[in-house]
Amino acid sequence: MPKLTTPCWIWPLAPHRLDGRATVKSRYIYRLVYEAAHNVVLDPDEILHHKCETPACINPAHMRLVTRSEHAIEHGKGGDWGQGDKTHCRNGHPYDDENTELVHRSYNGYEYVERRCRICTRETKRRYRERQRDEHSGDRV
Picture 1: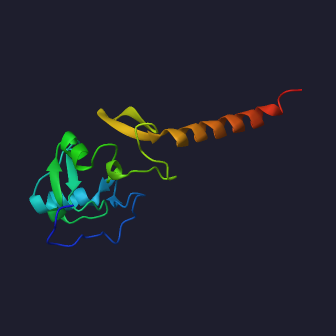
Picture 2 (picture 1 turned 90 degrees about the horizontal axis):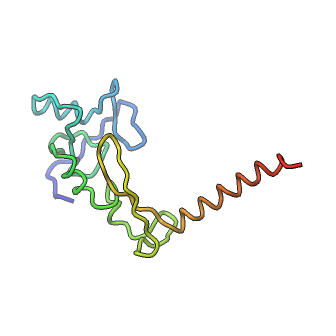
Picture 3 (picture 1 turned 90 degrees about the vertical axis):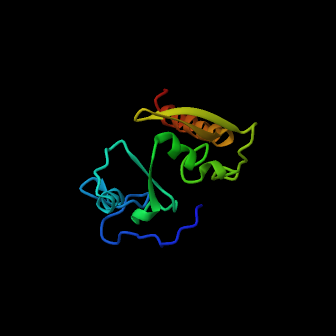
């Protein structure tokens, strides 16, 4: 993470989304603050990168305008906010060659690769099949 000379500013008044970013009338406050500080109007497709890695920060000194590919590189391979640095899934299984599946995804025209734990995927599918079997077992007479 780059060394910043100013602290993060966290917006105290507006409701926050689950990721911590505050919004007003469907606009992210950090974008509004950046626009006011730089006297510009951002196109909705333009991306602001938080150099501080704090999504809730609205300090315009902590943001820079980047391309989609620059933004993906800033966040590392395999996901946003340092996901590429993780060595294990949330259940403690290793992200190694044998246990990691790479899934190509797209969102709003942006292509990216997502890592998935094969052990967790197998377990999720097993639980799903069990639920389906249990729900339909009463159908048979």
